[in-house]
Image 1 (spheres, rainbow, N blue to C red):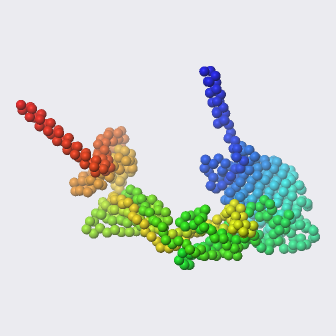
Image 2: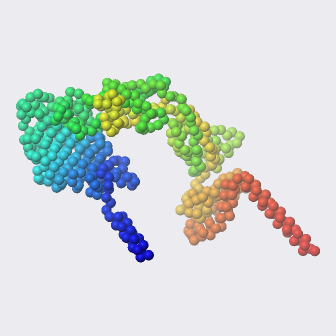
Length: 596
């Protein structure tokens, strides 16, 4: 027995130690995404700073940042922590003030595939032994320093970055670092206090101060004796990130003139992302029956191999049902043979109506492929001339029907209008996957899907009517502290108008009291005295349990009369009649026996 107790105690202590120790995340890759935040995914973070903090408890960590704009100042505290975006152009880090990224006293810093926008400094490195910074875009709006070195000298590489419109591109680069295959364009100063070696295969364009003395012949940097033009010919440098596209157009001097014959700039080199810039300007029209014309703005990057037009019937988002592959010279196409006939339209399910002063509130279930809903209502209190009115309420599942007469019963139904709708998105793919008809959208060799566009085609079809609901609007009589639509005393006793007991009494009132003259007279009397009684109960809450007890027979009767089947009611009535008859017969027998 003692041995078993010792085992249990030891096991309990072990569990306590495990659960109370700092959590060690075993997965090596930490993801940063705008869609993160679920407690179920412990390795996904909504900010880069949160991922950096978690990396201290991770074995061999790395951080991958999905496309999005992140506004924060990131302090690196983990040595040799690779940080990389998934899509350079649309993975944007911007700082509200101060440096976007700082690192102090670390051994190695690795940062790649980001667009860094800063008010002062993009990356600030203090006493860092080795820095590897590649395939990034640094945009400073003419007032920021892209990379700033402070303290001890560093080794490493700054390669295949694009420095565009910064105050200073690289401040005080140490002599031990390799600066290779970068584009320095329209910066006030490209290199401040630079080294004179290890600067190779870069493009220096329109910087008032390059900070570097070019050799007239034999230099690998541009301009040189062979390549005089320096304009990198960016696709779209005028829009701010993430709309800025610094891919290269045909004829750029940066194509193939980088180290080992690769492109110069953020989209060159072995580590560059292979995702073309996203397509914009998608527009749809229907030129003829069963066809849709799709137009889009071209992607002018020199290595675009073609476009894919994706589309689906009555379903939004990827994966799409069909794809049309087109050449890079084509920015418009007509998709024909599309179905115009609506296969089927189901009936909505109409919920119980809500009430208000001169208003009934209707809500119903959504119908697939519905483009509009029709609400039909009839004033059934006007028996001789009852007509049905129909309203187009739009593509919504709720509607407040106003302008009604209080106390009049209205019968309401809903139907759906459906029309085939096609959803379209366009992507661009690069020239390496022309034969394959594209790559993987948003992952490799093919852009992310463009903003989706939709268009209805064919005729509109009306589906069957929903179930019907009947109710009547009524004036809400205001009283202090009463949430009231009519059942004043019950509302005060049960605490709120939505209580099931209150709703049972209200339903009984609608079905059995307001349908006849004596019942309506009773309701009018109750509306006169009820508010005062409810106010008294609210002022003396100790009365509420007694009132609820007193209301139990009424609530029970109301529930039976409104919820029980016709058969149950008939059987109860017969049973009650038999009971009355038996009691009456017994009374007569007793009376007769007493006479004898």
